[in-house]
Image (cartoon, rainbow, N blue to C red; front, side, top):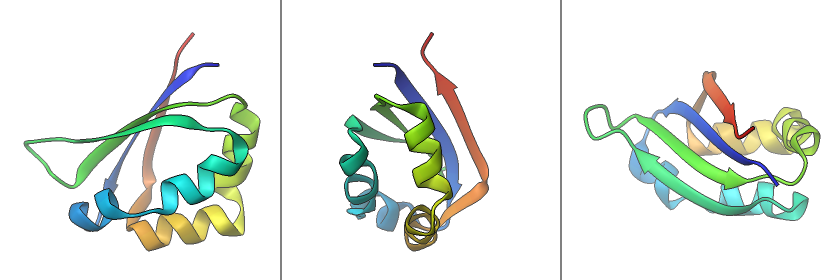
Length: 87
């Protein structure tokens, strides 16, 4: 199961950190080990590490109505999302 790093910008870091949406959206597709990170020099730049059993399922979930709604709820600026995948 690869470990994935995702980085992006958010509108409100405190709201993003407290949000239950990551677990609600990613948990059902088997994503585990989600840990959040914040850039100390630019607090709207955030990231997370997660173990992803199926990258296709993750990408489909992100592009689904549920995934888009969760990103909007979390204040994620989707155009800034970058993924790094363990090889």
